[in-house]
Amino acid sequence: FITGKRKVTEVAHSVWKNIIRDGDTVVDATCGNGHDTLALLKMVADQSGRGCVYGMDIQTSALENTLSLLEKSVDSNERKLVKLFSLCHSRMEDVIPKDTSVRLVAFNLGYLPGGDKTIITMPGTTLMALHAASRLLMSGGVISIMVYVGHPGGRDELETVRSFTSSLPVESWVSCKFEMLNRPSGPVLVLVSKK
Ligand code: SAM
Image (cartoon, rainbow, N blue to C red):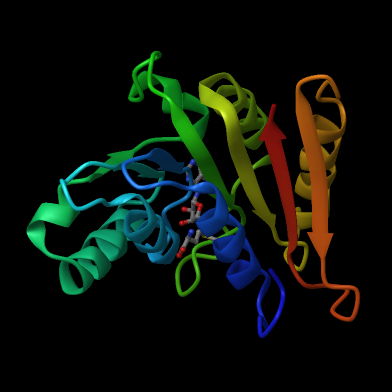
Protein backbone atom coordinates (compact mmCIF):
# COMPACT_ATOMS: atom_id res chain seq x y z
CA PHE A 1 0.00 0.00 0.00
CA ILE A 2 2.82 2.44 0.66
CA THR A 3 5.35 1.93 -2.14
CA GLY A 4 5.78 5.16 -4.10
CA LYS A 5 3.10 6.98 -2.07
CA ARG A 6 3.91 10.42 -0.72
CA LYS A 7 0.47 11.26 0.61
CA VAL A 8 -1.70 9.40 3.08
CA THR A 9 -4.67 10.03 0.74
CA GLU A 10 -2.87 7.96 -1.92
CA VAL A 11 -2.44 5.18 0.62
CA ALA A 12 -6.19 5.38 1.36
CA HIS A 13 -7.04 5.13 -2.33
CA SER A 14 -4.87 2.08 -2.76
CA VAL A 15 -6.55 0.42 0.24
CA TRP A 16 -9.98 1.24 -1.26
CA LYS A 17 -8.95 -0.29 -4.59
CA ASN A 18 -8.26 -3.56 -2.83
CA ILE A 19 -11.66 -3.61 -1.14
CA ILE A 20 -14.10 -2.23 -3.70
CA ARG A 21 -15.52 -4.46 -6.43
CA ASP A 22 -17.20 -3.52 -9.71
CA GLY A 23 -20.84 -2.61 -9.19
CA ASP A 24 -20.49 -1.82 -5.48
CA THR A 25 -22.27 0.90 -3.54
CA VAL A 26 -20.03 3.23 -1.54
CA VAL A 27 -20.39 6.53 0.33
CA ASP A 28 -18.28 9.67 0.22
CA ALA A 29 -19.30 11.33 3.49
CA THR A 30 -17.29 14.53 2.80
CA CYS A 31 -17.24 15.36 -0.93
CA GLY A 32 -15.15 18.56 -0.68
CA ASN A 33 -13.58 19.20 -4.08
CA GLY A 34 -14.67 15.80 -5.38
CA HIS A 35 -11.32 14.02 -5.70
CA ASP A 36 -12.38 11.13 -3.50
CA THR A 37 -15.83 10.99 -5.13
CA LEU A 38 -14.20 10.68 -8.55
CA ALA A 39 -11.73 8.04 -7.34
CA LEU A 40 -14.59 6.05 -5.80
CA LEU A 41 -16.68 6.34 -8.96
CA LYS A 42 -13.82 4.91 -11.03
CA MET A 43 -13.60 1.97 -8.62
CA VAL A 44 -17.32 1.07 -8.55
CA ALA A 45 -18.39 1.73 -12.15
CA ASP A 46 -18.67 -1.47 -14.16
CA GLN A 47 -19.20 -2.20 -17.87
CA SER A 48 -22.94 -2.72 -17.49
CA GLY A 49 -23.56 0.61 -15.77
CA ARG A 50 -23.80 -0.67 -12.22
CA GLY A 51 -22.18 0.86 -9.17
CA CYS A 52 -23.24 3.76 -6.99
CA VAL A 53 -21.53 6.53 -5.04
CA TYR A 54 -23.59 8.44 -2.49
CA GLY A 55 -21.83 11.75 -1.88
CA MET A 56 -22.63 14.46 0.63
CA ASP A 57 -21.33 17.75 1.98
CA ILE A 58 -22.81 20.60 4.00
CA GLN A 59 -21.34 23.29 1.68
CA THR A 60 -22.97 24.14 -1.64
CA SER A 61 -19.59 25.24 -3.01
CA ALA A 62 -18.15 21.79 -2.27
CA LEU A 63 -20.98 20.05 -4.11
CA GLU A 64 -20.55 22.46 -7.04
CA ASN A 65 -16.81 21.71 -7.15
CA THR A 66 -17.51 17.99 -7.03
CA LEU A 67 -20.06 18.21 -9.83
CA SER A 68 -17.76 20.25 -12.02
CA LEU A 69 -14.87 17.81 -11.48
CA LEU A 70 -17.16 14.94 -12.46
CA GLU A 71 -18.42 16.83 -15.51
CA LYS A 72 -14.93 17.29 -16.85
CA SER A 73 -13.67 13.82 -15.92
CA VAL A 74 -16.35 11.27 -16.77
CA ASP A 75 -19.18 10.84 -19.28
CA SER A 76 -22.82 11.41 -18.41
CA ASN A 77 -23.55 7.69 -18.02
CA GLU A 78 -20.88 7.31 -15.36
CA ARG A 79 -21.92 10.56 -13.74
CA LYS A 80 -25.41 9.17 -13.22
CA LEU A 81 -23.91 6.63 -10.80
CA VAL A 82 -23.14 9.47 -8.36
CA LYS A 83 -25.94 10.76 -6.11
CA LEU A 84 -24.99 14.05 -4.44
CA PHE A 85 -26.75 15.44 -1.38
CA SER A 86 -26.50 18.70 0.49
CA LEU A 87 -26.57 17.01 3.84
CA CYS A 88 -24.74 16.55 7.12
CA HIS A 89 -23.19 13.09 7.08
CA SER A 90 -24.78 12.35 10.47
CA ARG A 91 -28.02 12.06 8.45
CA MET A 92 -26.73 9.72 5.74
CA GLU A 93 -29.40 7.17 6.63
CA ASP A 94 -32.05 9.68 5.46
CA VAL A 95 -30.91 9.22 1.85
CA ILE A 96 -29.38 5.74 1.74
CA PRO A 97 -32.04 3.01 1.85
CA LYS A 98 -31.71 0.71 4.87
CA ASP A 99 -31.31 -2.50 2.85
CA THR A 100 -28.40 -1.11 0.76
CA SER A 101 -25.18 -3.15 0.94
CA VAL A 102 -22.52 -0.50 1.43
CA ARG A 103 -18.95 -1.70 0.84
CA LEU A 104 -17.08 1.45 1.91
CA VAL A 105 -17.79 4.72 3.67
CA ALA A 106 -15.04 7.31 3.22
CA PHE A 107 -14.55 10.31 5.50
CA ASN A 108 -11.99 12.99 4.71
CA LEU A 109 -12.42 15.29 7.69
CA GLY A 110 -11.47 18.91 8.30
CA TYR A 111 -12.06 21.92 6.03
CA LEU A 112 -12.60 22.37 2.31
CA PRO A 113 -9.19 22.98 0.64
CA GLY A 114 -9.36 26.39 -1.04
CA GLY A 115 -12.56 27.23 0.86
CA ASP A 116 -13.56 28.67 4.23
CA LYS A 117 -11.17 27.14 6.78
CA THR A 118 -13.57 27.86 9.64
CA ILE A 119 -16.18 25.43 8.28
CA ILE A 120 -14.88 22.13 9.55
CA THR A 121 -16.21 18.73 10.46
CA MET A 122 -17.14 18.62 14.15
CA PRO A 123 -16.54 15.77 16.61
CA GLY A 124 -20.24 15.49 17.62
CA THR A 125 -21.64 15.07 14.10
CA THR A 126 -18.61 13.05 13.00
CA LEU A 127 -19.36 10.60 15.81
CA MET A 128 -23.05 10.37 14.80
CA ALA A 129 -21.97 9.80 11.19
CA LEU A 130 -19.56 7.03 12.23
CA HIS A 131 -22.42 5.29 14.05
CA ALA A 132 -24.61 5.63 10.94
CA ALA A 133 -21.81 4.31 8.72
CA SER A 134 -21.29 1.32 10.99
CA ARG A 135 -25.00 0.46 10.73
CA LEU A 136 -25.04 0.73 6.93
CA LEU A 137 -21.83 -1.17 6.29
CA MET A 138 -22.02 -4.69 4.87
CA SER A 139 -19.98 -7.56 6.22
CA GLY A 140 -16.48 -7.28 4.72
CA GLY A 141 -16.95 -3.53 4.29
CA VAL A 142 -14.65 -0.78 5.50
CA ILE A 143 -15.00 2.70 7.00
CA SER A 144 -12.03 4.83 5.99
CA ILE A 145 -11.44 7.99 8.02
CA MET A 146 -8.78 10.55 7.12
CA VAL A 147 -8.19 12.87 10.06
CA TYR A 148 -6.19 16.10 9.92
CA VAL A 149 -4.58 17.36 13.09
CA GLY A 150 -2.99 20.64 11.93
CA HIS A 151 -6.06 22.90 12.34
CA PRO A 152 -7.76 23.99 15.58
CA GLY A 153 -10.01 21.17 16.78
CA GLY A 154 -8.24 18.56 14.65
CA ARG A 155 -6.66 16.73 17.61
CA ASP A 156 -10.01 16.62 19.45
CA GLU A 157 -11.65 15.11 16.39
CA LEU A 158 -8.86 12.52 16.15
CA GLU A 159 -9.54 11.63 19.78
CA THR A 160 -13.26 11.18 19.01
CA VAL A 161 -12.43 8.94 16.05
CA ARG A 162 -9.87 7.00 18.09
CA SER A 163 -12.27 6.49 20.96
CA PHE A 164 -15.15 5.31 18.71
CA THR A 165 -13.05 2.96 16.62
CA SER A 166 -11.17 1.53 19.64
CA SER A 167 -14.41 0.62 21.36
CA LEU A 168 -15.82 -1.46 18.49
CA PRO A 169 -16.19 -5.09 19.63
CA VAL A 170 -13.24 -7.18 18.50
CA GLU A 171 -15.53 -10.12 17.60
CA SER A 172 -17.06 -8.18 14.72
CA TRP A 173 -14.62 -5.38 13.87
CA VAL A 174 -10.96 -4.83 13.06
CA SER A 175 -9.75 -1.25 13.76
CA CYS A 176 -6.38 0.07 12.76
CA LYS A 177 -4.53 3.33 12.31
CA PHE A 178 -2.00 4.41 9.69
CA GLU A 179 0.25 7.38 10.24
CA MET A 180 3.49 8.51 8.70
CA LEU A 181 6.02 8.36 11.50
CA ASN A 182 8.42 10.69 9.68
CA ARG A 183 5.62 13.25 9.16
CA PRO A 184 4.24 13.72 12.69
CA SER A 185 1.67 16.44 11.94
CA GLY A 186 0.46 14.77 8.76
CA PRO A 187 -3.00 13.23 8.45
CA VAL A 188 -3.89 10.00 10.18
CA LEU A 189 -5.80 7.29 8.36
CA VAL A 190 -8.10 5.16 10.50
CA LEU A 191 -9.58 2.05 8.91
CA VAL A 192 -12.25 -0.16 10.40
CA SER A 193 -13.41 -3.33 8.79
CA LYS A 194 -16.63 -5.17 9.64
CA LYS A 195 -16.15 -8.94 9.88
N1 SAM B 1 -12.92 14.39 0.10
C1 SAM B 1 -12.67 15.74 -0.32
C2 SAM B 1 -11.90 15.75 -1.62
O1 SAM B 1 -11.52 14.69 -2.16
O2 SAM B 1 -11.67 16.86 -2.12
C3 SAM B 1 -12.06 16.60 0.74
C4 SAM B 1 -12.98 16.81 1.93
S1 SAM B 1 -12.62 18.24 2.88
C5 SAM B 1 -11.13 17.80 3.70
C6 SAM B 1 -13.83 18.15 4.16
C7 SAM B 1 -15.24 18.48 3.70
O3 SAM B 1 -16.14 18.09 4.73
C8 SAM B 1 -15.51 19.95 3.43
O4 SAM B 1 -15.91 20.16 2.12
C9 SAM B 1 -16.64 20.29 4.40
O5 SAM B 1 -17.60 21.18 3.90
C10 SAM B 1 -17.25 18.93 4.65
N2 SAM B 1 -18.06 18.84 5.87
C11 SAM B 1 -17.90 19.51 7.04
N3 SAM B 1 -18.81 19.12 7.93
C12 SAM B 1 -19.59 18.19 7.31
C13 SAM B 1 -20.72 17.44 7.71
N4 SAM B 1 -21.21 17.56 8.95
N5 SAM B 1 -21.28 16.59 6.83
C14 SAM B 1 -20.77 16.46 5.57
N6 SAM B 1 -19.70 17.16 5.13
C15 SAM B 1 -19.11 18.01 5.99
